[in-house]
Length: 478
Image (cartoon, rainbow, N blue to C red; front, side):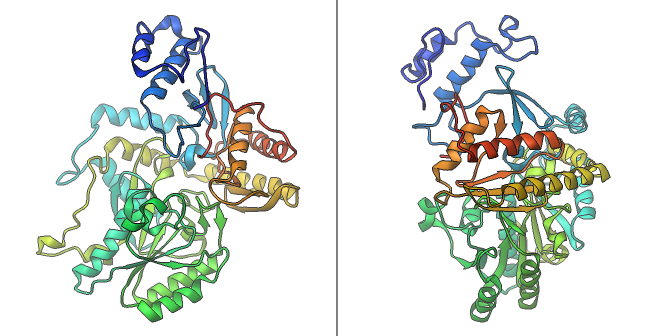
């Protein structure tokens, strides 16, 4: 943690948790005397947030030994976040790729409020409710034809876990067990154990490698011959292979690596011929990020299982879903109760989250499509201007996802990503580079002027501008 001291000489590094207890006496979140005119907490309340955070909170993907203090955010609207000082920060990454229509969209917030007054939560085993049933029906109407069953979970990683387990158990239930999963090099599917096993090996997974199940690796389609490797795998071990899992058309966490639609079609052809399931992890790519609502639509491909989360609720509440074919569902229909899918989550199909998802889906209209096209055009214009610029190794784009690969040591731990994150935050823009790959993946409400601001920050960084000092707080990868 960087050393921070307030006006009262309270040292965030030197004081203990016991000291925090005394310091916080008399401070209240609801203290009207300690609030700004816009309702945001005043300085003292903001300090209290940071003190409690420093004492008790463990943040994701954060090396707390030297990470700067986090930025306390008090409200958000549209493409903007606002901190405790009232400073506006442009959210150029949709707050970890989840916010589709913009923060605090009135239609989604109204749906949440209405649902919370009627039904907040109910066990989803043996019970159902209108938001979940309506959401399942709406998703089936919008998904590639043939994906007719929806299993709800909590997030993207659990949606992937569900898909892998459904594939494996469906073969076992039919008396033809297959235990092998194939996945792409440089893939990322989540941080739970099954999702980690399917992900590419690297800093995220290496600690747990001895505990992860075997996965057959296929070359990253953006750099290698995936189809030749898949043909060889099917020839050698086709009777063992249950499923191939892919992030369709873009490998996200490894640097927004875009790959060809024809390769996806060829994977589908091979897996169909071999009786192997195709799992599409559309946690990132779903809900319009690549152009159509789902990336598989670009290649006119229907997977056997499709994983969703992130933008499913418009980015407002956590919810995951796995869509399956009727054939996979039928493998679990049996008088033998041991063939049940023994998987569930306490908050499966939470009614409030389902209501948010329904409201979000209704916003995918012609206006939303126009906004996505506008963003695509703006990305293309800015990326073309950056192509060949000193310090830029490559640029790439698919739909509303744009990436700039910087001339620097590659990899998630590349220091240049921390430098750009600190500089962009100082300039009022939230970027969180994936190592040496800076990307812009904005909410669809972002304006062209706001996008100009994002690219201006990147251009000035490439021109040599740097943060004056690492600020108090910052979205940097450690």
